[in-house]
Length: 202
Image (cartoon, rainbow, N blue to C red):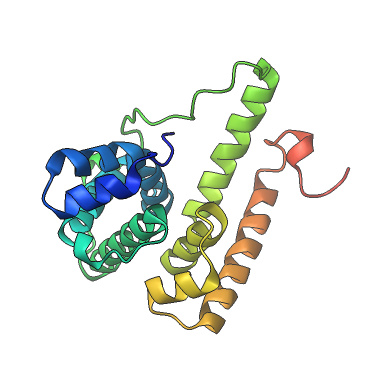
């Protein structure tokens, strides 16, 4: 996954002056991170790709509102809001496409493992990742978004509250319930998980 470009602020300044080339460099630097966050919230590749694309379109149009600080965090807030808006729209007008049906092929798999990992470690990590993804996907929209923002993307409670239009108490309560639900959900995968990842001792 690409890191922050060394000349990030220069690229941002050029993009704000209308340089598409500069903005495209920013897209290349952050597209994986934005897609990853969108995928964890939306739960499937096509919607995550659409949300990531919409995020960068929105970011380009709103570059004038960027006030400094972490550009990554600014982008991820836009991504989260984009996903949240889409999920709310779906609640109003639910629809299922053929691609959403079980068995639809996806090119998205686990990241390439580090060469130092043993085959057993790779298998264990893949198993754990899949279980966690399934448990996060099972959460309600509000809890899933807050859990991803907090525990995956590292946003503060205040940032989450501002992004979701919630008060701090609601954010903390939803996050606590989301974490408890994921812990409980992982118990259902207990026999599938390697012993090192099981929540209770044998």
